[in-house]
Image (tube, helix red, strand yellow):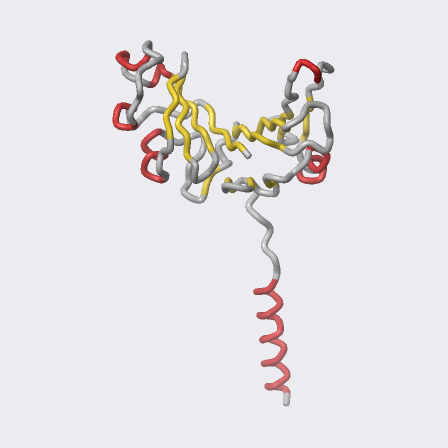
Length: 185
């Protein structure tokens, strides 16, 4: 009888421990969410999502000029984590549209972060498009709704000055570092 009771107790404990929800990784970047942030997160929900962090909101007061107010997220120790941009300025019900990653702990399932190189991106994802800008190039990855900004200083001299040139992924050095990494919703 004791043996049966003990077996039932052990089985119950195993079932309960397996059914327990694991907290999502707050630093995991996916196509439609980053930790607890999702593509439908509103500005007013940020206080509960980042309750252990500091939120800095810049209010320009000029919403008619079309300025989107950025929101910065800092750890309590002062280390900057993220820059968030809402779709509408000065609207607490506005949805977050862009997330810019500052902290290298934020990474995709394929281990891509702000500390990665072009080689890492190219091996992990299919590059959808490369935009040639004045001082940088934007590498787009549709699989993540992400863009990776690489400074043109990382490129060969022949690619730095002609903005009309189409840049092929083969022309970008493997060791080119990411300057910015953003997800767009």
